[in-house]
Length: 163
Image 1 (cartoon, one colour):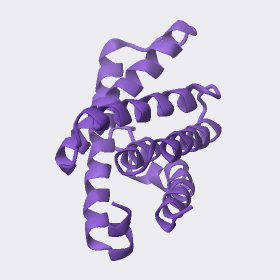
Image 2: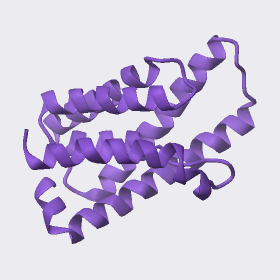
Image 3: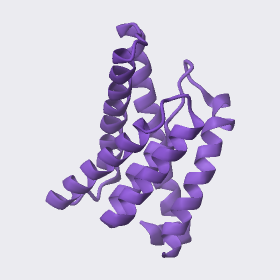
């Protein structure tokens, strides 16, 4: 395993801890970004299929064990979204970071819709207005995080090798 893959695995562990602890201080309208989803999508743009699928499962597992969601939903959805990015990258190479951030916004929104629908079917309804406000804000916040992550990668030489 290369150093860049190791950096991503360590980053996933750190971001998982940050997401459940420190990130609560930066909530906007009681919404915080999904750092693990952003990192998994970021990896899907950079690495080969086997590592991306492994990494998506790893990030989904971390998200599942550290949140109140039912175990398995995030593993399945993270893998699905990363596979979707891989398929898109086969048809057209996405090099522009703004397009990558847009993809993350769309994926984050779809991820939230899918989770909310699953919980609706499990008997945990939420009002449509509240649901849309939370979903859109969370997706924007998550995409904004990835935008700044790309800026960070451009400035740090060791991380620039990853991208």
